[in-house]
Length: 294
Image 1 (cartoon, rainbow, N blue to C red):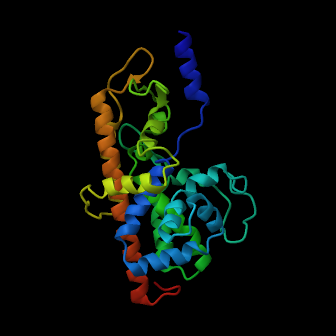
Image 2: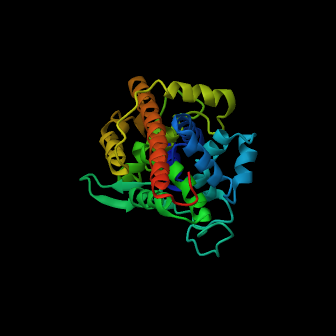
Image 3: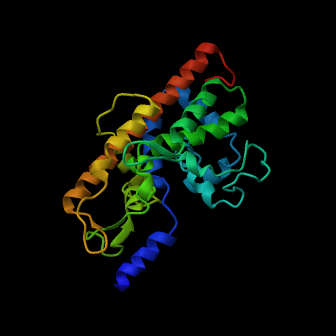
């Protein structure tokens, strides 16, 4: 009884999880980078160098290599949640290089009810707007701000629980027990999925090996942000576990294996599609001779 009460308090008070963790975003970003045209790489690197937080990304990456900078930029939209410069309400006056200082928490997801009707969240709407900005803006500062958001949200929309059910806040209200992890046997379902890519601090050779593994996954059809969202929603019956224990759902060995398989497929799909999306944006700007040019 005491355990059940503790777990109830854990669900009520703990901070909601928010995305693939940083390792997952870096993996998808590096996979995208490896597949992009040289002109696209040059264009996005030039934009990121103008971002106000580029120095922070270099410091985290431990190197100034363009691909590692790109990978770190993909984690920025989550990092600002813990940055005192940014606020949930966005009422703080913008600092140089930022259109606003909001964390835009509802940009990371869209929830549906059990009948499939849309509830909270804006990920698809905002991703479409940000892509339009990258396609059409001539403002280098605006482009530099929009790019890390696109890198991040393409990853988020491929995480099935970022399109999850509103009743449990995309799995944040579902407690699961993982017998295979005795050091942390109880965890929120959303957090379990966020951490499937590996430790958040994954970098260096281990990160490269993880990306090489993703490159073995089949390249998906490109589709659209709306179809990527629909794909994630179609996976929800498999993502929500069915085995209920005394105080939580229990993750079976079969569930754990399938979850890892789905996560790898979705991380790879996000990377392939992100690279193709940025290539298409660059070609569009080249065709119309927009400045800054690719």
